[in-house]
Amino acid sequence: MKKNIIFLLIYIAVYGCYWENQEALYPVDQFCDTAFVSFSGDILPILTNNCFSCHSNSNAPENAFGITLEDHVDVSASAILIIGAINHLEGFPQMPKNGVKLDTCKIKVFEAWENQGSLDN
Image (cartoon, rainbow, N blue to C red; front, top):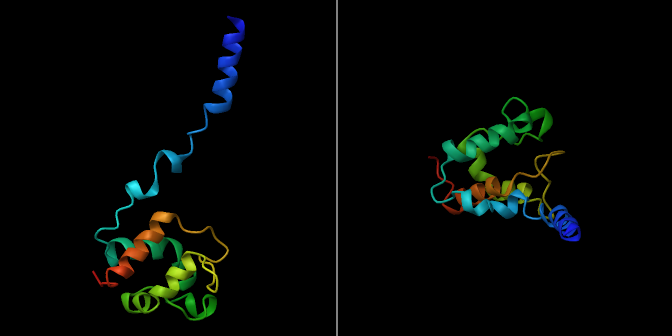
C-alpha cells in the first residue's frame, strides 16, 4: 500500500503539470477572432500599445527613421513590411525593437486585416 502511494505521488509530481501549459490548454486560434478586423478597433490598439513609443508622429523622426504608424494611410502603405517585422522574418527588422515578439493572435489579426484589404474602418 505504501509503495502505491509513493508511486502515485511521484506520478502526480512528474506528470501532474504536463498540461498546465496555457497554449496547450487554450490554443490561440480558439480565441483569436480574425473574421472582421477593423483598423480603428483592432489594428490601432495593437499599434498604440506596441509601436507608438517609437513610431508615433512625434517620436518617429528621432527614433524610427521617420516611419510613422499613427494613421491608416501610413499603416496600410507599410502593411507588408510591418507583417514581416512583427513575424521576425529574415530580412526584416525585428519589431518591436528590443522587445518581445507580439503574441500570435495580434500577428494573425494584423495579417487578417491586410488580407481583408487593409480597410479604413
